[in-house]
Image (cartoon, rainbow, N blue to C red; front, top):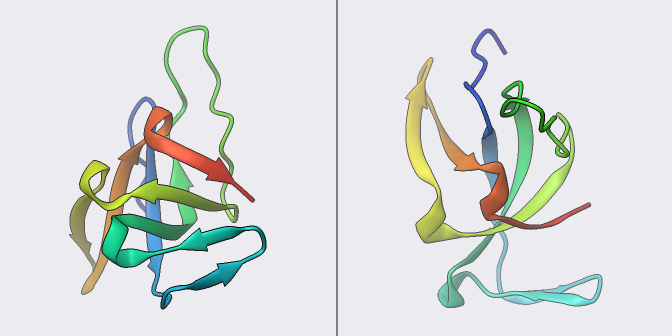
Length: 87
């Protein structure tokens, strides 16, 4: 990935799932919860390094992410604090 988000932002590839039990968490796209794989992270805010790393899977609310078209593909851009869980 040639792009890097600024500050405390995380760039994701959305993982499309159906309503099913994923581990112990029911991921329900109709309820507004989404999963994504982290493809790039910013440096964090001053004095607060990022706790999310490239390659991790995160759970987030769909309304908290913005669609970002890059190189013919659509990614999601999310603030780190809006991630609910990390795997």
